[in-house]
Length: 386
Image 1 (cartoon, helix red, strand yellow):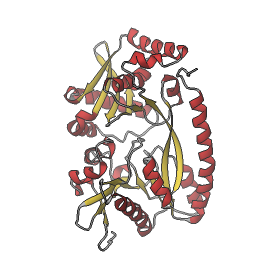
Image 2 (spheres, rainbow, N blue to C red; image 1 turned 135 degrees about the vertical axis):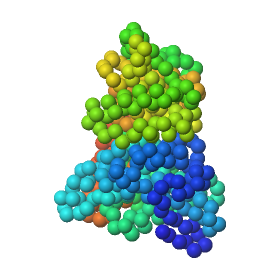
Image 3 (cartoon, rainbow, N blue to C red; image 1 turned 60 degrees about the vertical axis):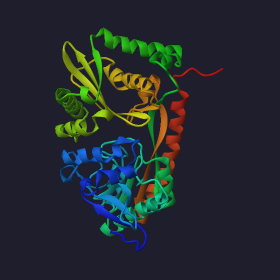
Image 4 (tube, rainbow, N blue to C red; image 1 turned 30 degrees about the horizontal axis):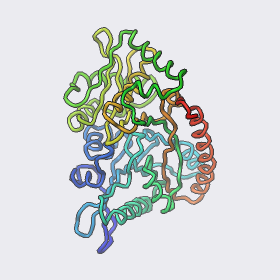
């Protein structure tokens, strides 16, 4: 796609298997499992990602003059704006009313995964900055060559965001709620850090789940059996349909996840009267637990909070993880110890008229999100120092 002479060369690939896993992962690193070759391959091989889902892989690979892979980016050609968690439907509607074609567009992201992490994947070493610049330039060139409306990089790290902003991308700020481990040795240590009222509320919720006869199981590695995935997929489908969502993840995806990443999966399952009734899927990073999907059959008071939030905190404390990222949305997480954190996305808009309009909108939105973060932070459930 782009030949730098003696410099790096960029090319597009239409499946993750077109690059060896070792080469991709040398750039992706081991901290964040979602950008690893195994996770992206599971999405593709299971049919969760592909033409039928509107996520067509067009991954970007950068090679040095010696042919070694020094950079990569998970890139997709999108025919819609679903499964991204950074909403641009209004932008698409406005552009199409003005006579433009917003779709297809380019998306640099992990499908269906609102987890902040690296998007400009570069092999550590002297070529790292060269590779990062080459990735940004190649994405912009792909946008131009294909004549597309826009390129969106969602949930990049702060370092990636700075590089993208310097290259002319518009910056968007979002909001999530994360739990931070302040050196707690036990869950009770965490509770002791809360105000008395919040501490009592958490204990009440956990006690209600236990008194309802519900047992929680935290499963990792070989402890996760096919029947657990069968049950979890049922829960996932039920909750997706109840919330008018689209269940992208196929049953086969969960088998592949278990086959290749079982040691990085935490599956929390809830059982009552010998039957599994709910579950939460988490992935384990180097210093974080990432909550991804939740599902439930039936109505059980406080079970969502126990399964998704408190079990995750318990696991993080036991394993010395620094934080829990519990996914998108959820101001209700604040009273349960999860505090607001800014997230980022970067947007390259081809049409200058649309770019100017979106730029103005993002200036106002950024100020509003900053106020929201401050307001949520002021509602902290933690005891304040004298």
